[in-house]
Image (cartoon, rainbow, N blue to C red; front, side):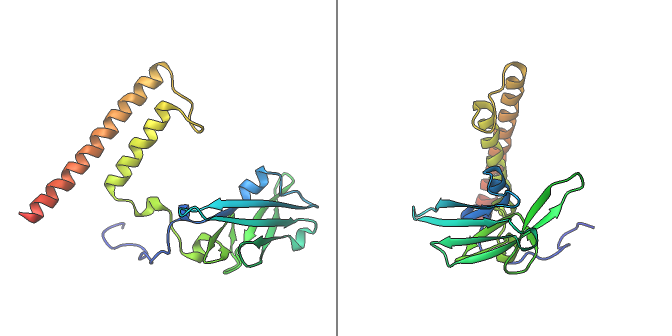
Length: 192
């Protein structure tokens, strides 16, 4: 089990999740746009790599729990996605988008080729799924470096915690350099 060529074969992907604009249900909930029994609206803007801005207007209608939906208008063709409100065990509701292409539950709708749909319907993957061992090692170094410097996600460690993070950073840097050197050795060995 788990040997070479085992498991489902990888299909061709259309890109990475990080490349496409997304409407995230969790973000809408934090922004108080998911209020049961109410209709709310807001505007979202995304800027892609070539500095073009995509702007959409979201209309969230939860006035009828059986016919809840989100309507998306703006720089994309008008679209509608149903929202399924599932009652929770101790009261309240949990909401899910129903993907317009395949009808499955999802929490994010990605804009690919002018259509908002789930990640699986568009066949897009996460960038980390296609990383090489060297890219993964370099990402680990960057993450530990951010933890040491402190940013919006991580507070700056103090005392013994900082010392141990510095040790982890040195070990990760050594690992990344070793992987890089091994790759160079194999490239030189292939040439000679």
